[in-house]
Image (tube, rainbow, N blue to C red; front, side):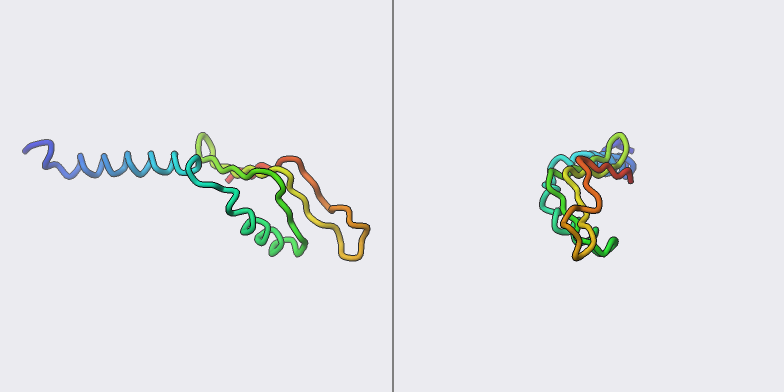
Length: 94
């Protein structure tokens, strides 16, 4: 049987392409386009306004993580306007 007729070869090539695509995707996708979704999700969880002022990055290698800079969570309504929480950089390990 020829190696070109082996289904194992094609399954191996498919697996290599899938893993390569998964590793390359975080560098190709513009994660800043998801800023509104992240802020809305933060509002849904905390009940307060969440703002992400800096860049957003996602990495899969060596460990999956999400990094966002300039994150702030608003203080109570009717307060003096200072944020409840402000961070220069937030890193979430998935």
